[in-house]
Every structure is written in C-alpha cells, then in structure tokens.
Length: 114
Length: 112
Image (cartoon, rainbow over all chains, first blue to last red; front, side, top):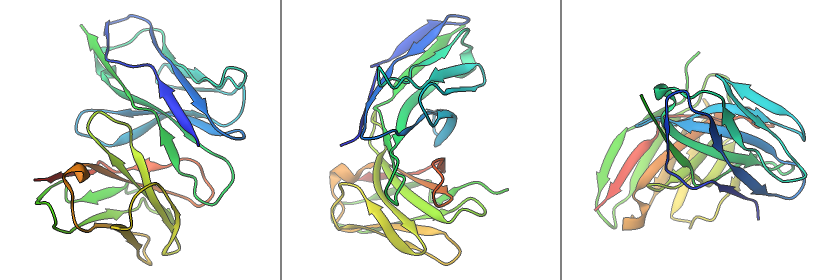
C-alpha cells in the first residue's frame, strides 16, 4: 500500500538557519504530494503541494520539489524563524479511485531558537 | 468564508462508552473525511463521506461509523470505546475530485 517516510525528529535550529526535512514515498502511479503544518493545539494547515513530477510547491519561504526518480519531496527553507516552530507532515494523495484520502508520514517536530 | 469547525474540542469518556463527534464542512465543500491522530503520530484515514454515503474506508473496525447530512456536515460515532481510541480526531472537507483537504482543529478524545 501507499506509505510516506519522514526524517525523524525532533529538529532544533537557530533562527536564520537552513532547514531540510526529508520525505520519501511509496505509491502506485503518480500521487499528489503535500506538506502540512500543525501548530500546537491546532489542526493541520496546508503549507504547499505538487501534483506532478518536477513541480515545485512553495509558500511562506518553504519549498519542495516533486522528484519522481527518487520518490522524494523534501521540504526546505533558507532562513527559519521562531514562528516556524511546529510539526511538519509530508503526505500523499493517490490518483484514481473515488476517495482521495491522504496518507501521512509520522511528522517532524521543528523547534527554532532565537 | 467559514472554515471547518469541530465540536467538542475536548471529551473524556470511559472504556465501553459511546461517543459522537461533529464536523461542519467549509462552505461549498461536499466531501468530508475523518482522521485519527494518535499522540506523536501522523493522522490515519478512517473514512470519507460524499452525498451522505461512505465513499472509502481505512483500516478501522465497524465500531467506527459515520454520517453525512444534506448540508454536508458530518458525525463520527465510536462504539465500545477502548483505551487505544484516545487520540485527536480530525475532520477535513474538500470538493469531490479535488485533492486538497482543509482540516478543522480537531476533537481531543481521552478514554479512561
């Protein structure tokens, strides 16, 4: 079945450091890929998405590129802020079928220190 | 535009009891999905509803059931609660055929 593997955390960085959170996936066909973010006590917010190979999703300084050859969708940000502290989830939505359910990774806790 | 809202925010039940969680979809969205998020884990798909019928189900037993109403709001019912049912339950709404889902803040269920 479909699965998502995320870099294990927690990750602690200083403000303005470079961030990479690795994500690889297993799926039949060509899924859509997502990064969601969860702030303490809140639900999930869509951060960015990509729907086909070589697409780059971007939002709020975060970027991720859909790499079909390596089945990866790594999240990057050039300069993190304290306000980026949250849990980040990589997810996929398989094409085909009537239910476009999301399959999530286990999440990566990011803490940014001032 | 009103986002996805869930109620209640927190709930405490004892083993063997039954619980009902509620979700109001984002305006215009006709599909509702429910997820269970155990502490420290990613959300797991429970089921999805479209046009008041179950439209897909994850690996959850039949004691997890749901409803969708004509206004697209939804309920998640869990019978015979077990300790392992303690989790954050997330509702997400979307448009049929679209691959972006919008999440509510969740209901935190504790089973004692």
